[in-house]
Length: 472
Image (cartoon, rainbow, N blue to C red; front, side, top):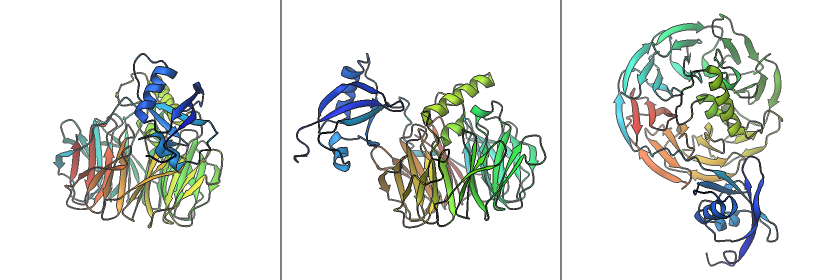
């Protein structure tokens, strides 16, 4: 680092993330200052904290991992300008690295196509090509219920954000509602004319007792259902081809993506089209919101605190939602067969914020981190890419030798796990920007992965019909 740039100092000012308020005076800092030294400056001199608290530092949305210098080299900072350094508290909660398989669980007689932990992390649901759903007690690694009713492959699963109900979408064109304590079938929802591609619940902060969900189908529609009602409350029909995915956002909108290349934003009350997002030139395969994780887990954070009063849980869910959005609008990212991802601000605009290229083949999955600050793209080019929520490319993760199917984040947003056609899973470290550990063990393609909200377990489902649980 003995370049002219490394020597000398830079005028800088600290700002808090979220509110953007300035903290302390303008400082002259050495360009070579490290992240650890910035911690000391901020804790001792600016905030005067009694105990040293961990913070992350960003310049132009790029995190300072090593030193300020490495970030300055990639940004167009002018000498005489005051450099804004944004800081935010780090999650004191840390997820431990997953290192080994604790159980290989038999039971399903065909490929496992979906795995999903309950919001409290105690129960795991698996859906299979054998038409059944199995419910497993995570602590004892044992199955306690087999849910029978579907007549074709189970393609998708979704837990209600309070953990009290489970829905499944199937190739048999139905959605079914289950009691996850007993495995009993509570209701079957019929109406779609094609197989179900995705299911998603209404957010807890909008409804303290979750009783509505949305399903998307190959028939080109999405439908909003209310528990107890035989027919759908809303039919969202505006696409000309299969709807590949649906998301129920946290601000009154439902988002659908389709093979017709469009994404439609719907009003979740009356089912009217709010805006159509045009930008992709081929099938849209995947959507992710910066609020996905908090919407999925509702009131449950890493402490797994239980709320007896539904209104208290609803308030906690609202706080968690607000902490990710910071009072701004939701961010949506889409991925397509046109090999690009697009960042959108769908609440306010139909124009793409930024289009991201770099993958050599179709993008199969986009997944935003639990804190909403990063997202990963998984592609049939065998690679994964990591981006900031604003769309700045951070790094490319190479290691899989075949298509990457699935990605899931650790709840502290430091790592994510990927599952591939190559039969392996890999855990990637987003801070060190490298492969953390390889998890071989499946005998065939890994179709589905999930990381428990408490950070303790990773679950994987494979074409080899085995469910595997992994931990630290």
